[in-house]
Length: 216
Ligand SMILES: Nc1ncnc2c1ncn2[C@@H]1O[C@H](COP(=O)(O)OP(=O)(O)OP(=O)(O)O)[C@@H](O)[C@H]1O
Ligand SMILES: [Mg+2]
Image (tube, rainbow, N blue to C red; front, side):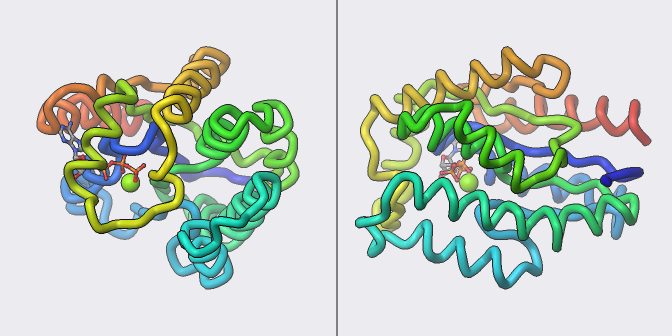
């Protein structure tokens, strides 16, 4: 049971700007919400040793022998721990929980990107989250070419296994996200993430303000 709090996820392909924008949104929200605000991110999670250990495993480029289904299960396992240990207690306390990636990432990346099948990944994640879906998902809609270019420009030294994929992979991820968004129109708020970062921050801020005004 989640109740009283609000769960908001930030989703989108690599380089869409989720983390950068979220950092700036947190700076604006913290003075307003104080302790009522909890930031977390996946894979892993705030104050969550088990989930952070799984994060190390799935994002570590030395584990390039990992089977695709093993990867799905590990992401789902980390998410299970994240829900139980970090997200639900905060929601029960009435907090506004904002997570940088959540269940839709698995459906888009493993289901669509790795072509395991979106429905299969949804089923596995149903077991993990037991109904804890976000109240709102802010989707950073970026053209795959732009997202990849941003990553290339700024993370020359960072070896992240999931960033080493092809344009075709990123296109599948992006198409899958749009299918999820289309299936969940009430939950998804779509942001034009091709724009300048200042504009993306403003558009996101408007959406967050509307959510908080209607829910608080
Ligand atoms: N709107 C934008 N215009 C130009 N550059 C941007 C924009 N948004 C983010 N960037 C830059 O692109 C890079 C990737 O951004 P960021 O890490 O926030 O993306 P992300 O969506 O969190 O990606 P990932 O899914 O890989 O974590 C950063 O260097 C950031 O400064
Ligand atoms: Mg990020």
